[in-house]
Length: 234
Image (tube, rainbow, N blue to C red; front, side, top):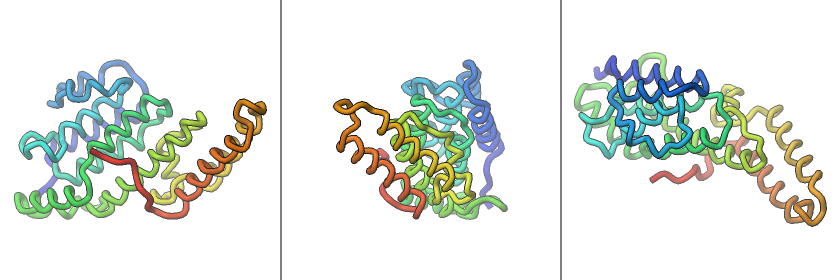
């Protein structure tokens, strides 16, 4: 059966480890180049820092590229690399959110990923079956959908300067559930207090409360069910 090639698996491990370390110097850029990634392709990702290796690996593995030029194959490994890297990062700044969104945007849509996996299955027989103990391709694609919802929630939180580490969306053990009830309630209370502190005439009016209510409802809905429209991808 087709298996993860050793270089691709090592690149995945290195990318996830770099993200988990948090902000560091330019070593991630050097590692990306050494791994064969076109670092220039990820250059527009300002503020990437230690996230660059994961961002470059995903960008240089897009399905629009000919299979021999894709850095990370099979498709299941690409999805797992992106997901593990994003959720491993402790960063909560806006620059990191932009990089996470770019990584998400570079991932294939469900139909395209399934078609690519079938092709890989024909090449090596078995790419649809992810390595033992790992999520199936369908499960990985569900987690990509969840990632889209989590990024949408992060943008809401960012508007209130309340971003959380991406891992917070998985602390319940259920990726689809989003934030834990305790964390969600804490955030909702902080949003309410933030609006309440605004002086009248500068945001502490009905319009501000309506905005806060809409944001809070969006966060609550995220906890209730998988689904909803994730951020669009090109």
